[in-house]
Amino acid sequence: MNNIPYEESNLYKIRHTAAHVLAMAVLEWDPDAKLAIGPPIENGFYYDFQLSKTLTEKDLSVLEKSMWKIINKNFPVVRKTLKKSEAEKQYRKDQQPYKLELAENLEDTELSFYGIDSFWDLCKGPHVKSTNEIKALKLLSTAGAYWRGDEHQPMLTRIYGTAFESEKQLKEYLDQLSEAKRRDHKILGPKLGLFTFSELVGSGLPLWKPKGTVLRNVLDDAVWELRKKKGYQKVEIPHITKKDLYITSGHWEKFKDELFLVKTREGHEFAMKPMNCPHHTQIFASEQHSYRDMPQRYSNTTMVYRDEQSGELAGLSRVRGFTQDDAHIFCRPSQIEKEVKDTWDIVDAFYKKFGFKLEVRLSLSDPKEPEKYLGKPEQWQQAEQTLRSIAKSRKVAVLEQEGEAAFYGPKVDFMAKDSIGRQWQVATIQLDFNMPERFDLYCINEQGEKERAVMIHVAVMGSLERFISVLIEHYAGDFPFWVAPTQIKILSVSEKAAAFSKEVFDGITKQFRAELDTSEETLGKKIRTAELEKVPVIAVIGEKELAEKKVTLRIRATQEQKTVEIKKLVSYLTDFSLLS
Image (cartoon, rainbow, N blue to C red; front, side, top):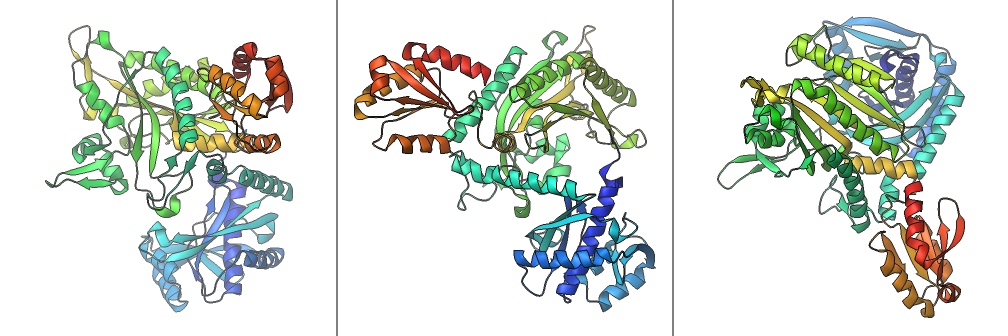
């Protein structure tokens, strides 16, 4: 397995150089363009420009042709340094205000530049040695982007592209993009009647329709059933808090610019909660705990709010108000291993329901910078070794990432690959020595002494909104029977069959999520409607079924048709649910 960081890979260098070639092509197309930044990103690259003329999607093909002309000339990619004063002088002369601002804000006295032919760009690299190392590229789309991500700054034009080491890899990626577009939750979700957005309510604040609410509840109930077996208790907390809570926890300093703030008539300052853990510490701290009471396990599915920038919002994937299936365990250090194992069991059991194969990442501290982390080195060594040994006992491959731990403790991140090969971070288990210290959380041990508690943060789905966006795209809206908002839709063929269809409907609604269609539409139209709604099972009842006391089932997943006696319908659907 190749463990070279992306930032050090040849692919990263290819994409970085492709971004510079894009800037050259844009300057050829619009000599008055002002250049901003052009970095590689996870699946390609982009470059931001202030253009003097309108760029359309059709112009992307023009720019792409210009890029290939530059690439095929096999220009060497050369690095040089300039004194900061010389660089600033040159950018003023070239009337490049964004590059000038970048140069002025760098502390170095000598700045790094990379050049292709006569084009030079302020850049720390890395790059390939020559342009003909770019073998496959495609310009993908355009978008608006504020300079430095600040809505008070000018809006720039961002051009996205991608590059790969071969045409085959590029084709595979473009095919994946095409399939991802077909599965886009931002399109499918509203079509399936799951959620909507309103300009009057605001961007990034989804509104859940009845079917979407059912889906949320089914998923949350599935997690709760697993947690309940492990001894969790449900708690509830307010949506706002005095800022003092976050000052004590340390979140105020880190998150204050991302908080929605509320001032009362009396001048008190409150914040909409961006996370739940500080609230949960106060439930634990509200009474003294003996070692016999430990651990305490709190479960809380509740909304949190973060003031995300408008340009960063994306359907359900990035929102301003989202729901966490949050849980916090307060335990003794000696109980960490068992609690993490039990939590890991919950994660495995939940994701097994969807057929996701999980990849495990262990985020550790950086031994070279111990000052970045709270707690004693021996605590960290014990905690990290505990997570390692648990992973080993589960016989899973683990990718260790030094320096990726939270400042308060190491964590286990679970990554899931969807049906088209994209990877998503889903569940997480985090050890926390910080908040128990800050809030003075403890239990009384066997010797009658205070013993510092350890806090374990557990999110199985993380954000329900984001997880549902992943599910929609993973299944292309064709949810398994057990999770589908409507599991079976009963269609009556005629008026004579309508009353019997209602009897069948009434007989299964206690066990299954059903809908009944006795409208006067043709059977063909009723079936097409149910298929567009991606209902897993369609039950057709006509005069034949009425006479025989049977129902004809159409199974969406297999296109199979099956006739089932009414008295056996519930048991058939129960078995079907277990298999789906």
